[in-house]
Image 1 (tube, rainbow, N blue to C red):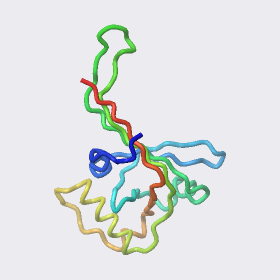
Image 2 (cartoon, one colour):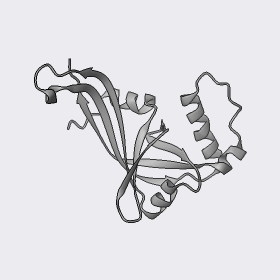
Image 3 (cartoon, rainbow, N blue to C red):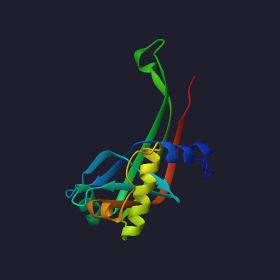
Length: 152
């Protein structure tokens, strides 16, 4: 794969609404979950409950994998059934996760998430008290790959 990241990769990381997070369970089996996220300063941030299984799994093994896809168009089969496909793009992130310390930093990330997911506003300002009921996971990107499967 070309080492130069295409512009659409950064755009998808900024605009996608859901990313799939894979962590490792206690027995080593992977578990995949869709989560809301914020991409900022080259890192991915995910909010969750402080007692979440994701937290326990990350504290035990910080390796994670994340995936985003953008389905652009379904292409129906014109002959054999398996010729049906999608015009799509995807990004896969391999990284290490940690919990974000500091209520001020957590507050800023929560504010960024609210601005991303509810740009029209209508919610009260994010307070330091809000940071007490959530945990923020920060993913340091170790490897980034992408797949551009554009079809007509």
